Length: 195
Image 1 (spheres, rainbow, N blue to C red):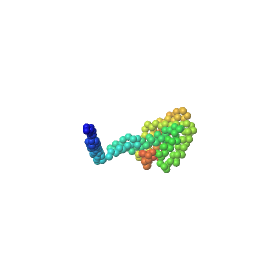
Image 2: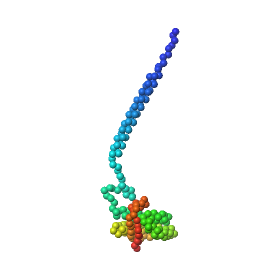
Image 3: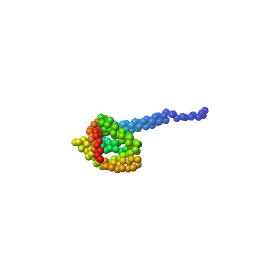
Image 4: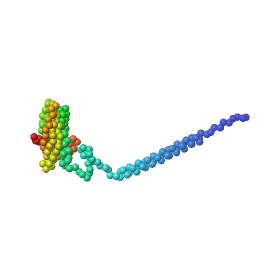
């Protein structure tokens, strides 16, 4: 009657061990999530109590200091420089596009006369293969007269031949609505070129 008895270990202690190990892992994970949540709440409260930082930028993208607002003359000069770049710097391939871009600096009431004037320039430039560049040296703005006197150099290339000359231009301007193309709100009402 010697029958061998085979003893088997119960699986319950191993299951309880695995369960308690997983519970410990979940407890540590929950505690770390709670700490991160508390840190996030503190950071949100600190950041929401501060005043927002407002960055003011000039049309060129430079930072504008709140203590020093721009002078009217400087803003008008910047608008005139952009107008000169669009109106007087072109090649035969892009003359039409550049001159139409300069229309953003002309009041809607004066655009018909402006378009008539630039139509001749477009036709002449494309037929004779003419390009032009201007390099303004000095821009003098008179707020009383609402005029700007520009002096500098003009280089014209006609069918490969270069000719340089002086640029003396008087622009009359007035203020108007600011647009995306003309963020200064300065509109040219009259051009007078001195020879």
